Length: 335
Image (tube, rainbow, N blue to C red; front, side, top):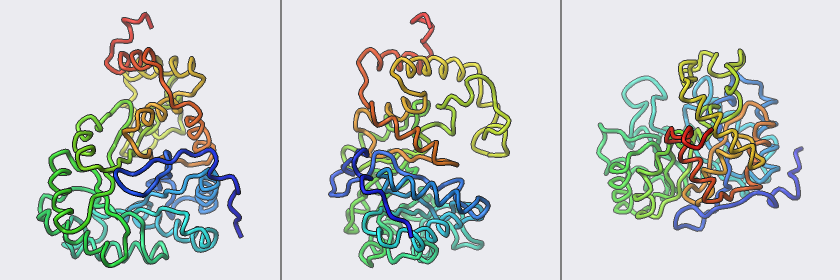
């Protein structure tokens, strides 16, 4: 039986989630890819357990994660059952519902029928009585926000989720739904959205997040690998860009991208970090993001990413250089 590392909380940084009592690790494990039935269980288990040993207490899932859909929750449920059962109170489990999950008119969206049924299925796959955070995965323009909010509030009141989160909402939708949730008797704890140095949505969302006192979680903080050194000197045959993945294609590796990535890599090198470490540090340095969600196919990637926590500080000069690169003005610095 697995025995967790006794020093697992020493190096991790924990951030308060909005105006709540809940702390989340600055880096969390996302089980979007590489944790489904089509991947080796032993590799998935190793990533989960070694991440927990390094202070990653937050495991982010959704009903449709894994191949086939739902199998990532089954993998996490097996690890919980066989290895982590005695640590449930030290773990934050999150799942989501909103995208297409099963056939027919009740298998996606934001209706009470779908949200309640999906969570019941997720709890069964995970083998737990409750999740810590239940997200509505996307806005549903065909369902009144009042219905979605009332369904989510009812789920909290039933004890099947402790907190409610929203994901992929725009600023106006987020503010409106936050109001409906409060009217239904719960607060939106956190919003999850895409963020990286190359795609900074928090600038649009920040006023709402601050006004509503929500936390924020960022997925794809390394832009599907574009903010690593993987593509700086060509496209490796075993890379995601060369695969059949719909999320990153070879046409993403443009001259403009390479120019920015190489300039950013030089700044990272001067800081004593890899490009990935600097990208994660940049996401976290000013406190706007509560946590960044890391994906991995092997634990060594997580280990490298955790190295970013050793240096989350940036000088004003470094920030200015980075902003110039991202704005496409790096050549003005002679780089």
